[in-house]
Length: 269
Image (cartoon, rainbow, N blue to C red; front, side):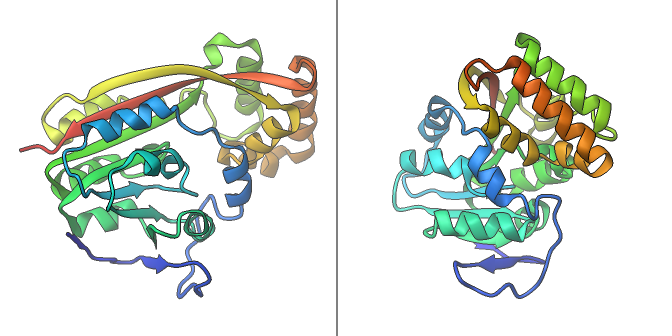
C-alpha cells in the first residue's frame, strides 16, 4: 500500500504539531466527542461482513475524533492497518489519544486519497458533505484495492417524526446564517454511481436515544450550525435553545430519533 502524506501531518500522542491547520471544528473536539451520537452497531457489522481482505487497510476520511472507529475497530479482522484523516488538529489529537494503534493524519481526504493505493476500506462517517465530493469519490475509486469498498455513513436527526426536533430546526433556520434543514439532502447514490459506474447498496436504520437536557445543549453547541448561530445571535439563540429544551423535556430527558444511512460500493473494475 502507498500513502503519500502530501500537505498533511502524521500526528502521534504527545507529539508537537509541526504545522498549524485551521478547521471549522477546531476548538469543538471535546464537546464533539462527548455529545455526538454513535452509529448503530448493525451498520458497522454490515461493513465488516462485506470486507474481503483478512488483513485490511482502512482509511477513515473526515475521521473527527474516531467516532466511526469506536464501533468499527472491534469488528474488523486483525491484523489491520487503520488510518484516520481529518483537517482539524484538535480532532486528530483526541482521535490519536483514543485509538493510538491507528495512524492519524492532519490533512484532507482529497490529498491523501489521491496519493494512496491498495486500500481495502474507505469509510466516511458524517463527513462527505464537507468535501469536494466528485474529487473525493474519483480518488476513492482509484485508491481502492481490487475488492476494496467505499462506505458512506450518515446520522441525521429524524426531525419529521418529532415536534421538538422540528422546532429545533426552525430555531437554527431562524438564527444560524444560511442554514437550511435540508442542507445534507444530497443524492449520494447518484454521486457515487457517477464516480464508480455502478449503483451502491443502501441500508437504513431508525433508532433513538434518550439525552439529558444539558447533553442535548452540549451536542447542539458542538455543531457548526449552532456555532454560527451563537456567533451571529449568541444570547438570543442560547435563550431560545434553553427554553425549547425545557418545554419539550420530560423529567429532564429528551428522546432523539435518528435515521442512519449506509451506502456501500466496490471498486469500479
